[in-house]
Image 1 (cartoon, rainbow over the protein chains, first blue to last red):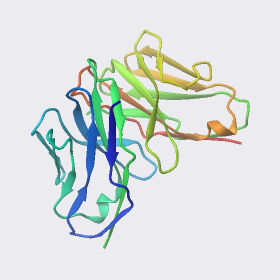
Image 2 (cartoon, each protein chain N blue to C red; image 1 turned 180 degrees about the vertical axis):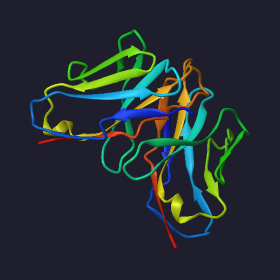
Image 3 (cartoon, rainbow over the protein chains, first blue to last red; image 1 turned 90 degrees about the vertical axis):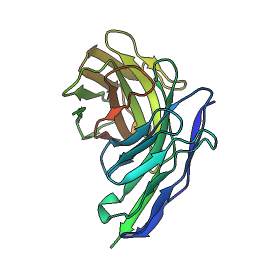
Image 4 (tube, one colour; image 1 turned 45 degrees about the horizontal axis):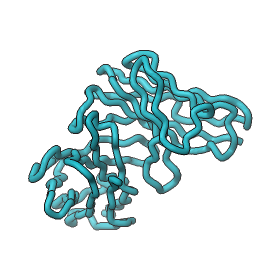
Length: 113
Length: 117
């Protein structure tokens, strides 16, 4: 079945460091891929998305490229800030209606000054 | 845009009571709403999917008589936890989508922390 695998956390970085959070997926068809961010005590916010191979999603300095050949959608940011501390979820949607939504286990990021 | 409001944000109640959680899409009409449960430091577990005016589709292992879902309008879905017990304590999150289709993201509420004593 479909699934999403994320690198385990927690991840701790110093401010202005480079961030990579790995995400790989297994899907039977051609899914759309998403990254969501969850701040403490809140719901999830859509960070970026990509709907087909080689698409690059980007938002707030974060980027992720849909790599079909490696079935990956790694999240990157060149210079993290303390305010980026949160839990990041990789997700995919599949099916005719896109109602089949699968989340990774989440990666906790802490950025220290 | 695409704001989803979930209420209440936190509820504490005694074992045996029923609790209703509301999920509203404030600035769009939601064709589909989803209810998730999240355990501490874990990912989201989809409980059910609901379309306006029709019965919810529950995931395997989720008791439909325990978790009643009503999607009465294009902007409101409710989850009622009936006869709640301590093992039902969890973080419940709803989401909504404006349109069907693979590329449509889900927009999430801020969640409800449910604690059953």
